[in-house]
Image (cartoon, rainbow, N blue to C red; front, side, top):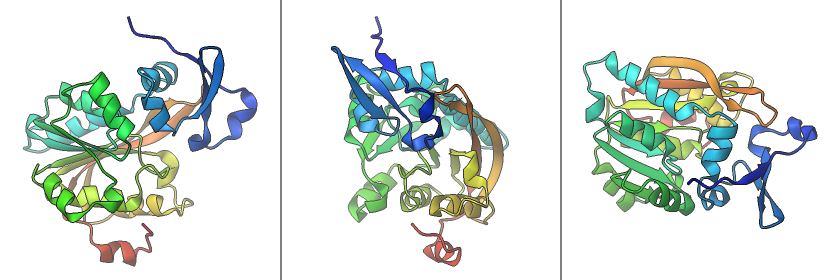
Length: 259
């Protein structure tokens, strides 16, 4: 029987916190431990805690949504979803990978910079990935880059990991450039990251990429990512498209994008 954890969300006065500052309390053996939502290394160490918070309590729909729009985009082409070799960037404990396996993708390569994410995947979803790398793609050395390139991935996905410092601009572009030309890309981002008022490097990069010659967008959809701790909907965009070429450093520099 699945273990239930005692978790408590803070009182209403915390509602003005930014999304990446939100936290909860985990009660264990009479003590109460404060954990931020983005403290993934701590959350992954407790079996079932991630799923209980984000999917049961806060009703996160992003893995299924991004998998769905990827399927829709591929159907518009002559490609076959079951032949895709997917690079899952920011794979975490395998929630997105699990959705892709349901769709029958050919190969699934996980990447995360947190060792606890790999440990949780092996513990909870053994055998899900054909390979799982604990690597920071912002600091990827040439030997490891060549090793991952040998998988010849023709699709990259990343879910609920962009724009809060979890995956920096350089890491996203490194992964994007690793997949084959004419490969598929599917990801989600907070709705405000497409707003011109957001001048952060990641937000600027995503907007410029979407409207550049490097990516053909097949599907973009606003949807409810999950609920906040106050029960309010948090909206994201899910985006799927096809890569036309590697993103050059000159392009990033010309757009004033800081890595």
